[in-house]
Length: 404
Ligand SMILES: *[C@@H]1O[C@H](CO)[C@@H](O)[C@H](O)[C@H]1NC(C)=O
Ligand SMILES: *[C@@H]1O[C@H](CO)[C@@H](O)[C@H](O)[C@H]1NC(C)=O
Image (cartoon, rainbow, N blue to C red; front, side, top):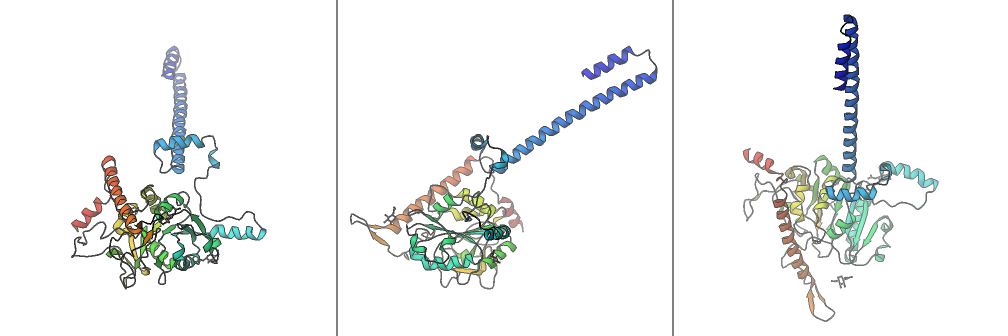
């Protein structure tokens, strides 16, 4: 405005002058306006770029924090220069010092270092089985982390691969308890796939490398190997191996209480795998980790919700791989998630309490697990009710399928 008035007053005093001068004056004023506008636009542009950059940094550093949480952490790291922040980690063992030899090796390994992770509870009673599993995975360059829940760690030292694995010990804790605490997504960020397996799985007909190739080519974000039904304890029909198939994503069943047809869009017919041998992609794990409740250590009901972590349509991105299959031995142990089956097939694993009163540990654990399942379901329902922004993500697919 000032410029404009200046220009007007100036031009008024010069009306007596010839046309050419007036014209030149106008041009000058226009130039000044032009320059000012340019400066203003530049300032707006810089501010926007800065805000965008800042928002991106926040998102990168704290992708899942709520706003309040971020406020807190941002204060914690605010005095550090941005460039020094390392927001992720890994499970790789590092040498305390480098020989020249190791240095050149390290350079090679940096390119083709471990890309996948096997995390598995390990009780001494299952040592032979875990040994067989771990050997298969190590030969495919997996990083291995063992969750020792029975206090026995030294007993594993004689195994030839023992010093390559990471051993974590916590008495009487479950697989989900360990996973929540030691597999934070930022900590396992470098791994493409995470196998969070029980220890009682037979892997004679399973090859981790071939398995992953199928998982990738089929676009699966969450999967499990099929169970050999003749040798396995089977809890859910969807896990049963289909011979001559590479992968299956749904089952069909017109009998029974739950009917599974083409129209089914969720568990138990499609879009889920069981908790005993799940495999997660990096993104799916980031989601699944958040789904695991810190206090509900038995993890019952979790698997039914894994489909929400499939990064899209769960009927497509969750599947059971048939050509690489396992045997589910159904041995009861703390690490496992298959205390699920409330059947008579449980060994009466009765132990003596100090005072002499018998305690059936299995039934206690089962009782606890059921009550946790109830809590988990209530929590989910409440979360859905209270989150006004939340939309059931599979609606679209259901409708489409029904129209077909
Ligand atoms: C595992 O790593 C070794 C050495 O880094 C490499 O020679 C080998 O090809 C890798 N094996 C697989 C299956 O990726
Ligand atoms: C773990 O559980 C077993 C069996 O229930 C029990 O004997 C043992 O004392 C527990 N250990 C710890 C450290 O709580």
